[in-house]
Image (cartoon, rainbow, N blue to C red; front, side, top):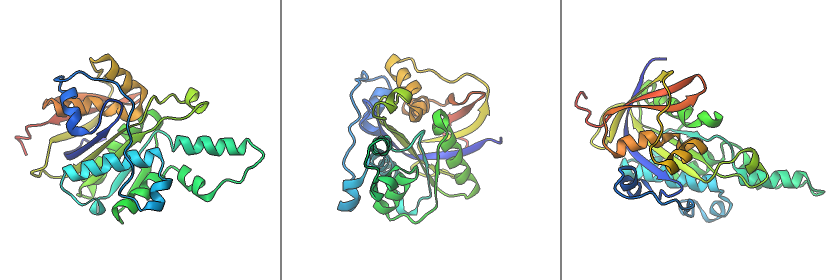
Length: 269
């Protein structure tokens, strides 16, 4: 695989102890202690009332992080192609459908069904933002953040356009939680651009490596990184927050990781 390069123009972040990207900076810089608390998902106010009532946790998470990243990049969400990446679908809806199928009443509502499919968040995103641009939706289990990052980088490079990556995971209810113990909702969104702009936060160049993945020194953040696939992004986010020009290795596949060269100075651009 050749090296893929892009510029990060905007970041959205929401997860346990992380309210948004600006409030997370002091934590990732080490200037403020990390305090674990459940993820608080805001209401999906950008959706019409009917869709807002039906929106699931993964929809709320996607909208919160995606809109934050787009606003930080000073772009119009309707103009951006997008890549949605999640290790699973809507856990709450899957749980309810399984319960109904195990009962005497197997009449599943159309709304329940269409909210359970893997591309539901992409559909709600297009309704909320008016986006008619191309949208890719993928799943790669624990490798989902890495797969989404590669897909978004490829699109930015090949199509030479700004692209939005939205990587999210949400918790499953029991008994599914025992089989797939995602501890809480976590989402990250990145606006990637093929060329440098005034909004650029960092330049990243990504290639495959067999080097071991980066571990986080903070024990609770390391536990989160290992427990939630979307949180595999944390070492990269920490480098950007700390303004480190360095290489960071992210978990991806069992036999391959992602080597991410981070340049926050971008002097060669």
